[in-house]
Structures are given as structure tokens and as C-alpha cells.
Length: 338
Image (cartoon, rainbow, N blue to C red; front, side, top):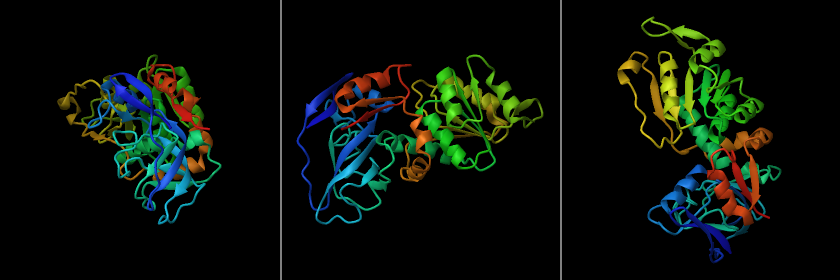
């Protein structure tokens, strides 16, 4: 069968691989959809992921149907629709340096453990929406790290998939008012459609001043001036100016959570932010959230569907990878299988 591999720096190719053999404790999955992640472009640019440099299978945002189960497997059945914890495979991280990737028709879950690698979902959830489970877990972890609570006010920088996922997660927690900041009009329009209370085009507006208008203002810790009465800031953009803008606006003991990958160092004036006692929290992956977010997707599939911008068939997977890494070309690309 065909599988998509990184075969060298900036080089993705079709590779013929053997179909998996199902053991007594295994579950064979027929992949039905797989999202393209920004980290796929990172893996490609670097020529793979250690220790598999030069031969790395791609695809770590899958949704699948159970195709076959081993003799000892219980609690799951052929035909079940499932979302997948790609970090719980015994042969390595699926699509992130392990022996398998999900940009291939069949994936083998070796040594299946109930409620560990797979969760069954309703069969009426569209495959391209179910494939959002993994990146939405990343967004949900960022919101959990922020400590956002019902009644809080929050702002998200970046209306890409993670930012929009964070918006939905914040709303699910009862956060009272969420503002989304971006510089692309269509992204801001999508944020409003998904449920943002307001949006800010940071290329046209002063973010700090606009936040005060939208979420109110409070005096800073020394009574020197007004700051936005915003409780939670989430950086889903990965741009240094975002961090600086957030810190210059943050009130006393506000929280800044950063799930974004910053490719360049960010300079901070720690003396300037000392008085605010702002809490900066990094957010990586999804230690517990992979199946927590599934309930939200099941409850609101139509809202999550808005996050997907492009759906391409598996035979165009190489094109999908190029589309996803081209700035401004697409928001969220998902590959689907017949």
C-alpha cells in the first residue's frame, strides 16, 4: 500500500509499504481522514525526526474505522468509528517519528489497551471533523493551562486552527467574553461565526486600547495607568510582537498562555512586567486532553467543521502538504480516504 514519507530535507514522497499483519492483541484501523499539521512541514524541512531521519512516515491527525481486531481484543468492534491518541502507540509516536504514519490506508494499533489509544465516536460525525480531535486537544490543553474559568474575559491572538479551537474550548468552560485578534479579515470573520464575542484587526487597531473598550479597564498595580480587564491571554500566533502586546496590556496577575511555536527568540523586559505579576505559562501537546475534547466535537460538529478550509483526497496528499505549508493558501487542510 502507498504511504507518505519524508525522504530527505524538504522532500516528501510516496513509499510502498507492506500491509500490517494483525496479532491477537492488535487492532487494525482503516484511516478515513487525516489532518495536515504545521509540524509536518517542520518534519519535512528537517528531513525527518530523529531517530528516523531520511525515512519518516507522516500523518498524526487521524480519524479511522476499525477494520479488524485480534482474537484477544475486547471492548471495540469492527466498523466502530474512532479518534486516536497518537502518543500511545507501542511502536512510537504515530506520524511523529514512530514506525507508522496516518497518511496511509491502514494503521496497526499493537497491544491495544481499552480507553488508551482509541475512543469510539458516533458514526454521524463527518470524518474531516473527527480528524480535528488531535489538534483540538492541543488547543484544549492550552485553555486548561490558562486556568480560565466561567465568567472570565479572554483574548486569543491568532485565528488559525489552534486559536479557533481555543475559542471553542473557552466557550465550553463558560468564559464570559472572548476576543480574537488577527490581521486576516477572513480569519476574523470565521472567528465571529464560530462564537467570538468580538474581533480585533491588529493591523488596523491598537489592541490594548480596543481591549479596554471591549472588556473594560482597571488601574495597574501602582495606579499609574489603565490596563485591560482581561483575565486570560492566549498566544496561538507565535509572533514576538504578540507576546509584547499581551504583556504591555496585561493587568495585575493576568495569565498569558503560549501554545504557539516561536521560531525566533522573544525579548522581554522583566523589570517592566515585574509589577504586574503576570503569569506566563507554556503549553505543549495534550497530556490528558486527547479524549476530553472529543465530547465538545460530538456536541458541536458544525462549529468545528468551520475550522476546516480544504479537503483533498488521499491521492493528492503530497499536494495537501504543500498547500498547508504555503502562507495564506489555506487555514486547515484535511486529507480524506475513500
